[in-house]
Length: 210
Image (cartoon, rainbow, N blue to C red; front, side, top):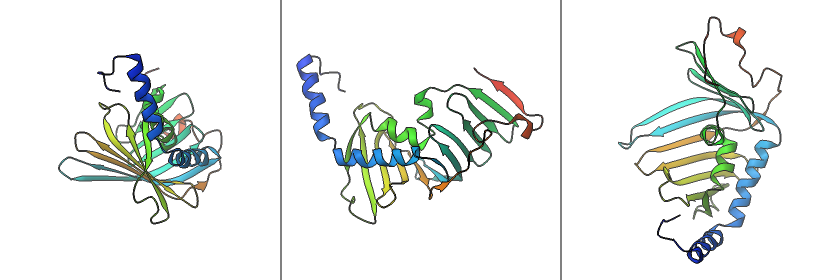
């Protein structure tokens, strides 16, 4: 919100304008995709793409397991596990695990579910001109905060399945980050699925930040 809006009346008018600009149907599509992720336990392939200001790209592929707000993300030699409270980040090359209790803002950078639900509350939501093409919803999220790190977030959702296909984050410094999610497959969850099992990592070094 712009700092020049210093009167209560101006603030109310500004908030009203933001609400009017948000497309309720577009927000509903995001909500359905979030509900889909919360409806059970799933596993899916993921691909992370980071594009630098120069245009150079770095691509990493992996797998994510999800059940509600719990997840297990494995990318290259790094594995992140979250059980709803505690997070373990295992670095294979170092054979080290870092344990913490992250806040919601930190988790929004990792979990597709929290990304969607978190950013949808901080942005104006609208369909893009291509929203009727290729069997996918194309939705733009434009942050209210003009100083936010990302000036635009694009969410692509499958119209038939309500599944998240891709999220694209465009930063003000010219960098771009994308997370692509493959087809969701039903996951059989055990007590060990979202907990770091020390016995499976011989001689692992533990860095406990709790």
